[in-house]
Length: 566
Image (cartoon, rainbow, N blue to C red):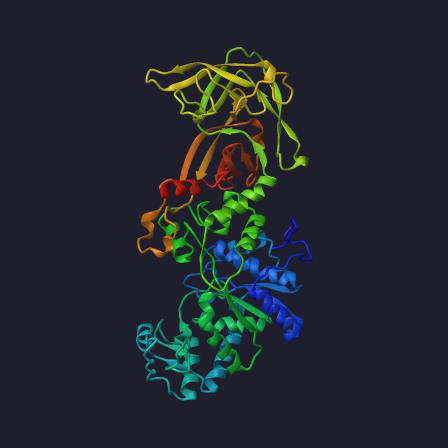
């Protein structure tokens, strides 16, 4: 959001160009809200946050930070059937990890239940709300359509006294779930279906994760949301576009009560390609065991992205790149991958790892030595490290071909290649097993070609990575890829049929250079020529290291798309 390395640095130097900032600029110019700016992020604790929520967090916190205002984290915990303390804790962790500092302003809608109840009584007394005995199905059936008005409930004209009595008895728990609701009395012929006597309260006999069994009636989102904003003194209530048609109801409730009235502003939600963003669909992936939890690195959840190796800076950069719009669109996930590549390219320690090893014996080399390797060519302060070299090494099996095509610049029979940070070697002999499979290469090295200090002018086109067989260690490497193999799976009824079968490949015994043995959970590295990797915090334990691939070095999917279209 700004051009500083630390997203919490103040002041913010760069203002995004979008219509929301223009609205706030005009409000400040006109001294609306007394020049205050106060935003909030109001998640429902019914699942883990995903990258779409990250966009909303960055937007709301970024606005508050730019204008020197305040930012609240408020849980909209009005549905005990789907909410859980696990989700509350994960959301708090994710918001803090992104750097959105809500200071001491952590709130819960459930703390306002008594005030909401009293305001509902006010509307009943004004003749603006009534207790309805229609079932949820009957309410839907009498709501009408875009071209036909709704049908008034037969309970719409109950007396104020009867409504007050029934509403109090609803609270006391005298009626079963679904038997009664409290509805606003507005206009059953309104062209906006949300204004056709919407439900304000429903009966749910379920223990609440914070309120326990104190309540058995719970406010709906439409009733609660504006009240929460009003209580907290929010100035700009920023919502996603699907709530635009709900804004007249938001305004109606606040105006009828005559209480402080924030301004609701809508923006387009984030839709990401090769991804589903629905909490319901994400929960289904978890429950069916398609992924190993909400934090699976293939999930678009913030916890999944963190475990995969994404950084807060990359996510902020991504939200800055995509901007804020008023119209829904599908954002290419490659932009998110680009953002993390750009960040890790500058910050990730380089290392060498061989995922599919082929043994190479250097027949004319004796002894061992330590070679200098650059830790990060993008960061001069990163320095160098020592890597051991010996006469037995591992290279990638894909870096050798017995019968290579024209233009192949890696190792081949009789061919030469440079070992990264080491020497030029030449393949002299190919060793195969009884099945005809290549199991070992015999090579010679040129001692005059030592990287950085060699006296030879010999040059070769190919440079490959390697590890010393005597010094490397084994680790599990998990190659994560996109979870779906179609661009917009969320739009398909049979979306589960398009799970990418290659979204995870587990390599149990990759060969890694020795300094990586000291890596800690969430440490990030660039495995040279292979991609960016992160130490998995979930499975790295008891001396075992597991590395997750964060992203490849290049957009391999773009290459696939180019080939398929040619």
